Length: 336
Image 1: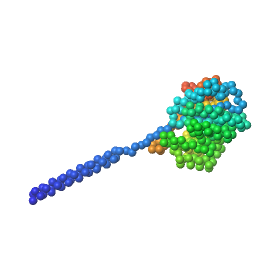
Image 2: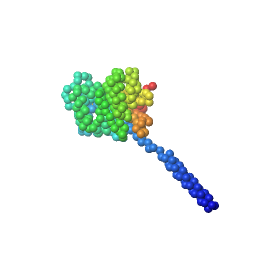
Image 3: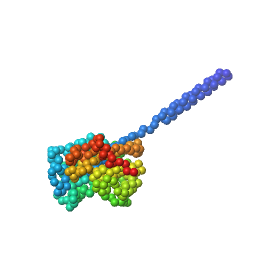
């Protein structure tokens, strides 16, 4: 009888011990599961934006000191023009410019004060300088009518340079992040069509960036109508607004955490042999994502001049330092 009781006690103890060990194993498993955190995919992309790139001359412009003459003087070396800023563009993830003027052989041009035109081979200036995308929404892209525009698109396509503007949008995939671009020339109001275009592009992209060609030439500040338009654009879903046309720098505004860069001025500009204001910048914007969700934005303004010499325009944008840099940066102060 005692042996039977002892046997039962031993069995109960063993079962209890096994149960405790099983619970401990489950606790260890649970602890291990808690310790293992889901992996966060972090992605950072940096975009560089520059102002007016006008490759060539305008109809009736004298040859001496012109862009075309500089090209010949440099032995038709397309690397010459952007070589002083190429290192910046190579390090970013995408460089975008305002291509102001067609690349065409067309002889027909609009009757206007400045009808720009560049040789189709000038497209290699962009590729050699690491410029990967351009807006064509400006008041000179059709200086040689539709033929000039179509010729320009053809050479850009041949070199795989993305382009956008007017009714054409563009989506560029950078490190798995889809960036949508739209461009408009002289928008006087924010229309229902523009709102729809942004909304539609937003459904296909992680970011939407708008390039506006707007404002008044040589004005150092944007008009109130531009500021209103920009805010409506951001309210519609735009993540960044870049501006051009005044040929001079203007300030930067922040609205709801989004940047509005009203004017980047000239950059590699064949439209003037010796402009009095040669100041320009490279505007860089960095977007940080976690699991494809935008979590942070930062920007940097790199001060430049459109020429590497002060006595004339040699069509070679160059980064500046010291007093020159301070002067340039004052022109893009934050607008309150």
